[in-house]
Amino acid sequence: MILKVGFIGFGKSANRYHLPYVLLRDRLEVKMIYSRTRKRDLESKYLDSGIVFTDKLDEILHDPDIQLVSICTSHASHFELAKLCLENKKHVLVEKPFTTTLEEARELIHLADKNQLILMPFQNRRFDSDFLALKKVIQHKGAGEIVEIESHFDYFRPDFQEHKGKSYDGDFFGLGVHTIDQLVSLFGRPEKVYYDIRSIRNPNNPDDYYHVELFYKGFKAIVKTSHLVETPYPTFILHGTKGSFVKYGIDKQEECLKAGMSPDEPGFGLDPEENFGVLSIAESVEEEVIPTPKGDYGRIYDELYETIIHGKNKLVSNEEILTVLEILEKGIQGENPKVVTL
Image 1 (cartoon, rainbow, N blue to C red):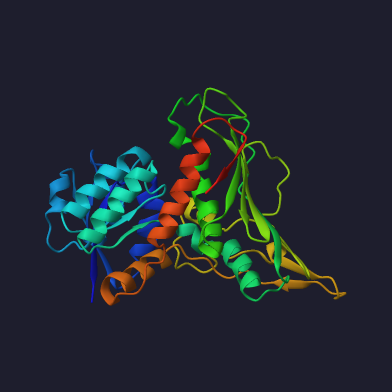
Image 2 (cartoon, helix red, strand yellow; image 1 turned 180 degrees about the vertical axis):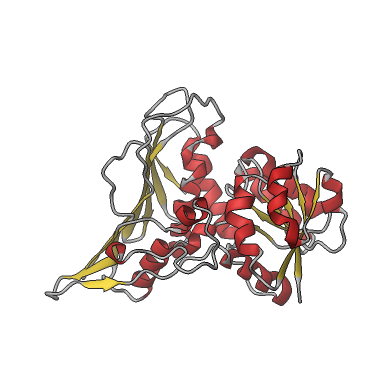
């Protein structure tokens, strides 16, 4: 059975992180893409795909063939667009962050449940190769019981533009939503959260630095992002009761997509061997190299297909959606640094 998809939004998100994967999947068909202003130059890339382009939102909302709508627009528009789609009996995938407030998220989830529809955020970085390597080590208890995990998503970008946006336009909502979600997907809801969220390049701009610690029973997980890191940290550090796992180098899919590669090209997204993670065990003289699994952002759509067509449980549960939004929202409220009990 073919799942027919409509897209709302036709910018970088749709063109870089969604369409290259969706168009390779035989069980999915992109029927229509809505953009408030037509982008004829971009549309020409898809002449052979049979996609209909429109600047009339109702054409997607009222098309009976379209079962799933993927929303790839600005943060502030997610809630209203998702609500419209749900009211028109469409399943919905929403780019991150899911919404800008926890209250909005709860309202959408209630509406989806009421209409027996599937609603989920596009947490594509659950399928980052570096995260899959970490997950493999954790599942096999390679380092023993977890003591501490550290996750980095850093850049060195000393030059920046003046950008006086909303608090949800900062990097904690934009990037932290990924690293927080990765940990919530592994360990669920933390007991307490420590926040240090700041703008280190321009105090008038939304945040570009965060150090957040999630406290679980027996261990803690740290997520960090800064735009002023010249010497890279490992992307993941795991310390356990038997040893440590260290992984350098972020997932290569984004780099390949920026270079114009297609996900079905040889070598796409492959991690170089020098970036493979290393597991060091206390009793062992030799370190174990952990080959990096292949990442694939398109697996989000594979999971959605199975959920919509075959009734499989959602990849990102409602509880996980609300937990991530609560952590994000409480982080940008009030002063920093602080500790919050969830």
